[in-house]
Amino acid sequence: MRRFITFALLLVGMFSQVATANSTLEIVEIAHPKFSEPLKFNVTLPSGYAKNTDKSYTMMFDFHHYANSYLSGMHQWMSHNGEWPWLQTIIVTPAPGNRIGMIFDETGKTTPLLDFFDEQLFTAVDNKYRTNGYRIMSGFRTNATIVLSGLINKPNMANAYIATSPEIKDDYVAILSTAKNKLSKLNDKPRMLLFSHGTGIKEEHQLTDYKNLKKIIETSAPTLLDWHYKNFNDHYFMSLPPLATVFGIEKIFDDIHQGLAPQSVISQQGVPAIIRHFKYLSKQKYGFEVSPKNSINQLGFYLLDVDQTKGLSVLQQSLELYPNDAYSYHNLAKAYAKLGNYLLAVKYQKSAVLIADNMLTWHKKRHRKFLTQYQEKLKTSAL
Image (cartoon, rainbow, N blue to C red; front, top):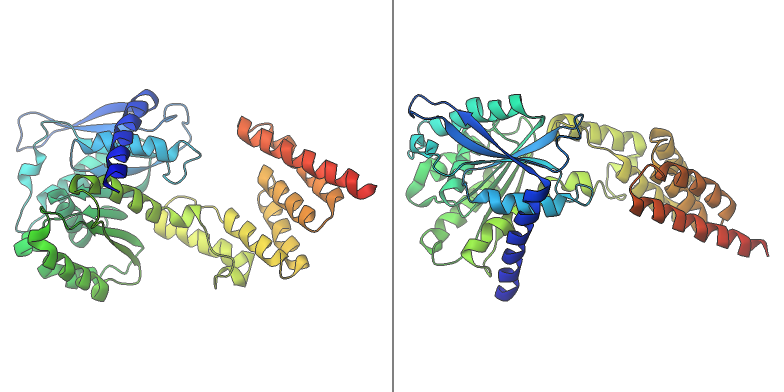
């Protein structure tokens, strides 16, 4: 296991080299009255940012300048294949030498550092770049404590929080003493929290505190706080931030990539219910449009095995909703092929091929391959 993790971390370094060739690093400077020189922050723009001028992006902030290397590299790898499983993201970290952390109030009684992030840094990034309003904060050790403080003290500053091995012993930043009361009030909109840690020598001083924090979250977190806990007890300490990032990103965007199970209560109510659910996700959880397409198609194929008429009806509704999507036609073709009706399978797959001509080569070849298969099946069935 440890050899595997070492290899994985070497790959992160490789990915960061690739990322520099496909993303753009810029600097944002912000004046602050406590510092004579402007504070500098690195902003890594994803591949295609300059070209795709009609696209807006999620923002991820980590308060460690080293984090930029592995976050950018992992992001490039995890988003280059159709933004799955990591939606293309603008990554913000402090530049080396940035001393804004000096204004952090370790008592937790005031929040000057969080105020700076919320009112100055994030606003500056929003004004200069095409952000979509969805924000992720991540941090390791003391920076993870800042992430937890952000969740309980300025919960509207971000939408998702990844806190790895936070320092909370002796009620540092008043996390343990105030979390119960403050977490219970966070039921006004969806938020996500990943609290993770290991059991290494640098964490053994507060393992009991971790248990207490987990218990507080279990008993106090409201329904709308989608929280997750992960104990990486068989990994090296310095491996934890990239591991937690992968785990957290998959959880954050799971609704988008996995969709609803066809057996779920919502899906069983039909296409209108699925559409309503994704409107809720779009407006309340993410703040940008999340498509119900995959969930509708999953329901259609599920019903195809139960009631062919209902299954075909759902897939037909998907086509009506997304008439310019090659896969809307392909799914109907696939359904008819499954039912042995290769005449209609060929008909719909031809339409899929026509639309796919404007897509990437992989999709073009895939749709042509299916068309050839259905045409051959049609010929065979006619003999």
